[in-house]
Length: 436
Figure 1 (cartoon, rainbow, N blue to C red):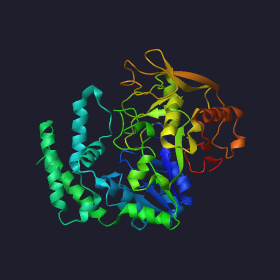
Figure 2: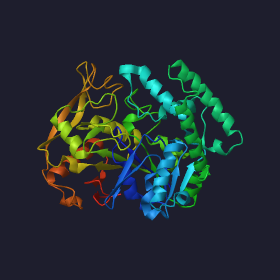
Figure 3: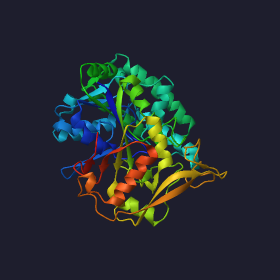
């Protein structure tokens, strides 16, 4: 058996949660391999909406009976937010402790990490990245600096010693940044709440997940690896420095779960029929006019966790080709097609005109320092007629309007990978599967 991967090909928020939920019944295990609780995966079914932050989106599949869900070593976990999310799921009748396993090697987000996140953003001023303030970046920084606290540490005798050592180091950093935390009533309460959540975390099945996933493949079990954020936010290959702190590409599933490259099978790459981005950073196809506002309104483009407005723009094939290449995507999944139902004209960026006048189809070293500053790559568009038809009631690809099928065919010709699934609405039933 080989593990399949499902990940985002844009700047995140592509709809990964819905598709994991759709595909999960075909798998024995769903494993999250990177990211933290800044990533909100939204699932809709039976008239209800569910937002998951750290727990894999396979949690609802099979009525929570047969699917094992894993939080892998590449994830950073906030015990407090995990407690809130887990108890909400348990209140819905899900036997979470029976179906969720957590890697001992996953790193913990400490109370001081959130404060460091805020201090770092404040220090950047106008150049701030636009983080969610959940402490993700500082936690990954400590991981790379070889001083982080891991889930497995909470069952070690010297856990409190390890915790205090890094906490006190953070206190010094916060003091130097003008945001002291030591001894404040606010921090004391936050720390007490954190330790209560750690105690709850101890009640879960904490495992050596690298052994678990490999032995599962050896014994014929199927695994779907679930990514967070999107390719263009990858710390190495995204629009640096406006990126997340982990590897969001397919290679991140190998390091985030302990899988060898040869154990990877299909790579499902998800993209929207248009583009969105949250936070700061360059976005060549961003629309600042009424069209962008309309896309945001129809698509309900607001952060699932933060509620922040998403910046909206036309589909960027320069970035999409790049993402397909980096991930070795074998199947494409097109989301939110129905959002564009009423547009007379739909545009697609096929190449960039760079500041020096050259035109490129390859994603360059930089596409600009910010959204509107000098040096921003200029998109060159190809226009398509809109399909002007409601897609959400259609369940077969052949029944889709010809204008939409032409749009899909052009995308496939540009990226040389087939669109295997088309989403025509937020509910799990509003999905057209062509081939898998």
